Length: 245
Image 1 (cartoon, rainbow, N blue to C red):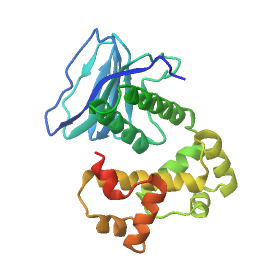
Image 2: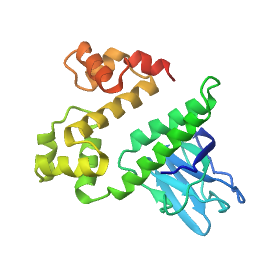
Image 3: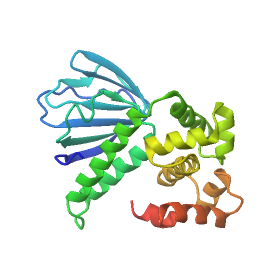
């Protein structure tokens, strides 16, 4: 899948005020713009889009594009790659179910592409995983799956049980677990842990809290429980995760 995909370049754009994306045309690669903060106003061809956090914009090769309005406090990740067909990623605006996971993948792509020690194929491979993640998110946009996503988003990474999520949404725990397993490859409990872990990793990268503060913030009974949870799911300690970036 996506065997012809090659990652070319990318970066992170952060603007405080009065930012308008430069207008371009004749770019030979597909560009993905992943909005992580604020609102970004973009046109692609004749269409205009208002993009907020959680939105991914696909700009096809050769398509005229740019900003049509000034932005305030916007941040986004941009990635250029070749070898993506519209059949593989058909929508212009994508709202992936696992946006936090997708942004972490995008950051890893940038990390590996800038590394002198790792082969370029590593970034290509992760770019393929990212496109698969975006595709799965689009295909899994049913009401039940969106409900799970919104419920956990409102919880902000706080502890939630599978029973609590199912009861709040009016579905059986078994039904939601089977639905997630079929669509995302993990059950409800595993998905809850994944979302919680993504929230923790996002805060780790922001670096605004100490590890002890993070553990307390995300509802762990003590610091050791926080470390055990993170290493079990991520395979490294929080400090090792931070140092990798």
